[in-house]
Image (cartoon, rainbow, N blue to C red; front, side, top):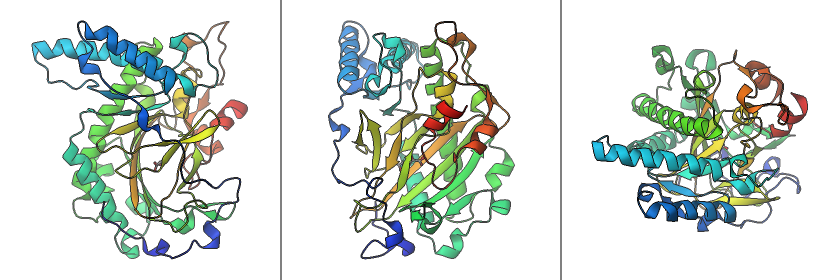
Amino acid sequence: MASQVSSCLDVQSVPESYIFPPETRPGKLTVPLCKTNPVIDLGKAVGQARTDIIQQISEACQRFGFFQVHNILFYSITSTCLINLFCSFENSLKELMVSCKDFCLHQTNSLEDHIVLWKQVINHGVPECLIIDTTKVFNDLFNLPAEDKVNVPEKNGWFYTDSMKFSSNGVHLWRENIKVPCQPLEEECVQLCPEKPNRYREIVVSYVKELRKLSLRILELICEGLGLEGGYFEESSEVQLLTANYYPPCPDPSTTLGLLRHCDPSLITILLEGDVSGLQVFKDGEWIGVKALSNAFVVIVGNQLEIISNQKLKSAEHRAVTNPSEARTSIATLINPSLDFVVEPAKLLVNDLNPPLYRPILYKEFVHSSRAFGPDTEAIKYRISSEL
Ligand SMILES: O=C(O)CCC(=O)C(=O)O
């Protein structure tokens, strides 16, 4: 990515109002990286190799708690490929059931009890050129002069915030951000795109459509992995939101944060990390870095999925750190319920032995009772356990 510098944060040393107190700041710059996680080719999970692949998946999950996956669902539909599609689907399910075991707070011996927190997806079917174009369009947007990025929400529907607006107890985050509503993708929503950069509307509309398809496919796998009837998440996935972050190079990343620790208020989030790493996930009491991979997505379970699954799925606590040399742009699309949707544990997943851990709540209430979409997006995981 071209090195860009946000005018607001083009500084030689970190201004005091951006320095977090010692207990919140990232401190050490090198955290363990999840770079040794295996890449598993689900397309090979046929015939004799199938057992091997299942074995690799189990080992990966025991050792790393996550893995990267090839061939998740995307084959052209010829009669031969349909068979592959079926096998991949079945194995994707298995993978969803067993992955990220290490991240769960309450471990049990049953694989079915350990479900996905997050994992990276490659061979996801989103055209690479679209990923490149989308990244470029957001880089261009963040590089526009300040007056072109001005936020006029009532008129434009999108929310741009510069770094000065993000604060936690008076400390600013090292990022710029834009939030764009994108589903229901009606004409009105399309018209609400920023006018600049020129190709923004065309590219971002294509991108959110592709990402919606990918999200719904992954949700279908999760649905089946949970043992819920097909289409269970249809009603709870009506809304889609895009949020893009721009983190300029920072003179002292050990004292600053791009984004505070938080869990997503979504059902599911699909994050394009870009080519520059900066995402960290909290695992076993420490932060681990998620290595950025070109053309790969990180799938993050959000709070609503944690509630609906009655905590069989755990939302991942994550944050974004900065780095001294490269600007970083990340693009997340969140699938959310509509505001009037009542979020509650799925009836099929609760019984006398597994009582509901959350009371039903209107999504609107959830959003209002938490800083779900605020500039700080603080960890709201604890809030859903203690206050719902
Ligand atoms: O930039 C990142 O890697 C994380 C972004 C994120 O967590 C968010 O936008 O909610």
